[in-house]
Length: 110
Image 1 (cartoon, rainbow, N blue to C red):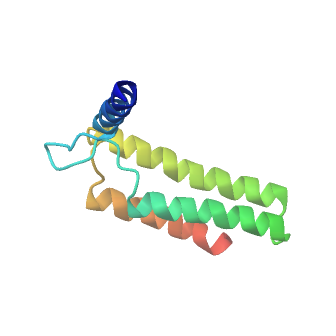
Image 2: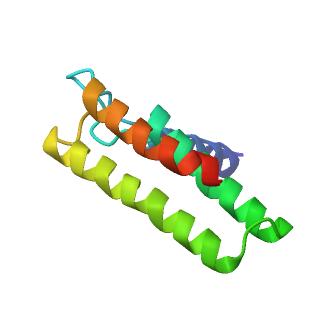
């Protein structure tokens, strides 16, 4: 009986440590250091998925898909550079507009 109680207590203790370690820290400055869900990134992911779908459906050749992916990746590199310029915290409104316009230029092709 004592061993069963000890096993249960140990399991609860280990579980509570796992939960404590899994909690993420809340940023104190109100910004995430590496935003992953912003509208520009979401658009790029959607475009890359659409390129893959169109390639598999035969709407695009491999060369066309590769060229479109390269254009989207160029916008991604600019986004990363903009984040770096801003201390890895955010995109300014002008940067978002510029990146959005670059994606708009690619959009009709996709």
